[in-house]
Amino acid sequence: MNPATRRCRLYKLTNESGHPSGLIMQFQSLATHGIRTINVMSSPGAGKTTLLERTIARLRGEMAIGVIEGDIETSADAERIETAGAETVQINTRGACHLEAHMIRAALKELDIAHINLLFIENIGNLVCPSEWDLGEDLRAVVVSTTEGDDKPAKYPQMFAVSQVMIVNKLDLLPYVDYDVEKVKRQALAINPQLRIFQVSCRTGEGLDAWCEWLVTFANGKS
Image (tube, rainbow, N blue to C red):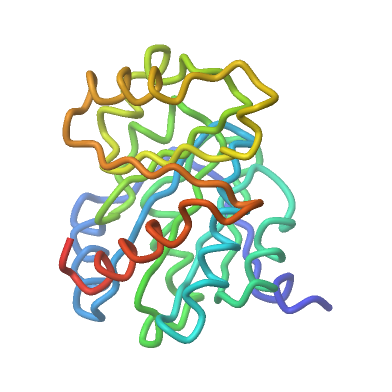
């Protein structure tokens, strides 16, 4: 059996979102262990999983990374992430369009958090619902890509309003698509002037050094 499959737990979404005190305890537990947490959100296919694979590979030996993978079905992404070298737990929502804090609390019990410096939560691919749910993260990052149109901040402003980081992915495809990076940046910054923006290509590696250097600073509590 694949190691990732052995770790995967199936969590069904219920109407019970958990008492607020549980969320506070979740913050405290991660902080006590010195773990910084990033909730990664995007539309389907923007490249969240590939970005995490490249990030894990570049930071191997520098910090221990854990990933909680959220998908409606399958453990495919969790298997990819574990192959890349990160401890992984899969959450399948069986139809729900977002993760909730009580799911994260359950998944954390499956991770060896004593040996993790940085935790990523890869949320369900959706630019609407995930923006409305607090998972106990330190920071929210939204990934957009050049293949999905340059109007996403204007169409889904809440996602960009609640995020602290925006990653523009798939720069290598710019010669082949009608996508205005500067327009996307203008729209996003008009919604959230404090938004930190990275531009990357997971295929060529462009921009990944700057992204990973910032992550190290963030994980060390200096950003």
